[in-house]
Length: 294
Image 1 (cartoon, rainbow, N blue to C red):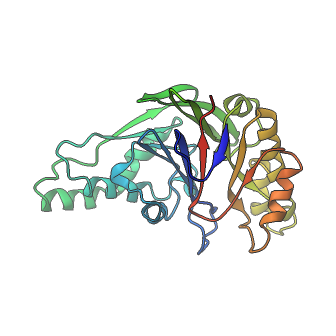
Image 2: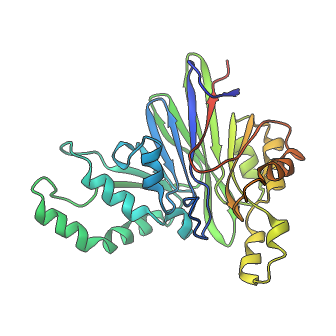
């Protein structure tokens, strides 16, 4: 596996749509990552501002193949309602297929509650537009392990992660195979190191991992903020996971606190102390291409 900027061979493209956290940041949208593979467009989590970032990345709600949710914390699903409504009102083909939403148990309840919350809006639009006759179509699948997607060379597998007391939580492995080989990307979501993530990420071309700076957070006076240290991975812990799993490239995201200008290499050095491969980090819309091996 290798990473390149412009390639003629089959690739999986990763776009960090939102690299922020629950704390509003004018420069970073909420947690969300876009995966393009084999003509399919997958959105992993949908934090605040995701639709604007999708537009900047040349994607849109009405072209999504599926929405994948790692867990149901508010910062990872903040724009779920906007996504569902926008996809519905901007899809003009007759009898559009439902949006597939794959997430842990509890996802169905959250989606149903979100659609109820937008019930007045949905009713207004059905009353106003003759070609809108039913609410936004969705197909929710709840999983904690195993293969959940197999379409046109793209396969998705899930495995449990450890973000307790948030439970269950899952990570995703996306693989795209054709005659030239298989490209693979694992998206960890929020988690501490765990054996199931190591197994999911084993040998992947890239691991996209959320990270926090525990050394900085532990010094803050607010206990509620310090609490996040016990269920997130530090930069070093995420890098150690990547090293154990033997991944090709480590992609960091969901920075807490946000990376200050000029501090990128400090974060990279913390990861490099544990991981021997390439390390990618950056602002929203940072892209990485994972190329298939032989």
